[in-house]
Length: 400
Image (cartoon, rainbow, N blue to C red; front, side, top):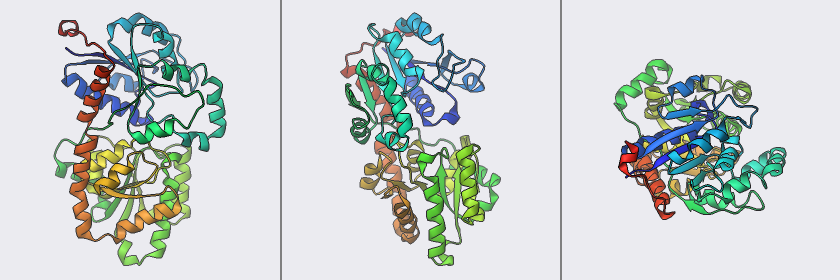
């Protein structure tokens, strides 16, 4: 027997972040286990990413405003909910979550919520005006979404602990599952060559890789300022081969601001902007990296962190990446604070590390991934959450 699972999500656009990538990878494993998975989204049906989505996708857009309101969404859920054993709401603060509550509350169809870090108090501290706006509809909207869920699924204890600090009236059934991602497939040497064919100037460099959205929360400004300090402070012979590789979308206001910062700091020749990488080129970037860095101010999980570990690349992260304790415990990288001194310390520790010691960290990184962050473990945890909450899967004949 297998479960009939419906995921709700704001968008399946891969540029929107790691949530849709997690859903896609989780679906691959769930379907291999005999479950059936579908998606409902607020995208417009003619969006190219809807057509390219490998999961059966019901697009209820076009939606209105940043909130994503669509008049088709709730009626579709009410008409189709009986086809599913369970609904998983991905994310908060969008109509994809509140609309799902409107459609499912008080019905026999159970639902779970994946906040994906959206209850982290960092957002409250950093965007106080947005937090006030959220407060206006928290009591009658997202508070109810969480309150009436079978469980709210947190990816680690750190996320669960932090979520309690964001809003008064917080009440839900908390459940911690392991979150993971898929490791690389394909020929490592060919992937590395594919990346270096495009960025030949990196072939003889000691690459420090940042891969992800160039977003204010990820600390790109800290990284550039710390890099400039280290280059000025250390002997040129110890840093001359180091190249910072920025892999991710940066054609937006903050990204352009960061490009200007790089120019202002005199780092233009020491930073390579690749844009968004996918497929073999993405894995080739990991294969070519000496280390991965993410000095983030807030990171629920960090798919790219886990992908680096899967490739045997040690990671340099802040203690605001919620899986930092696992990295530290497994000796899979270095952890410091999410400020300029901390980021500078990350770079200096990496550059000062004995090469033999650094090479020992590489297999530790892979072991950390295999033991903690493989997507297979996530799929097992999710099904266990269903079973603990006494959900009954559909008979096999109903899935055929």
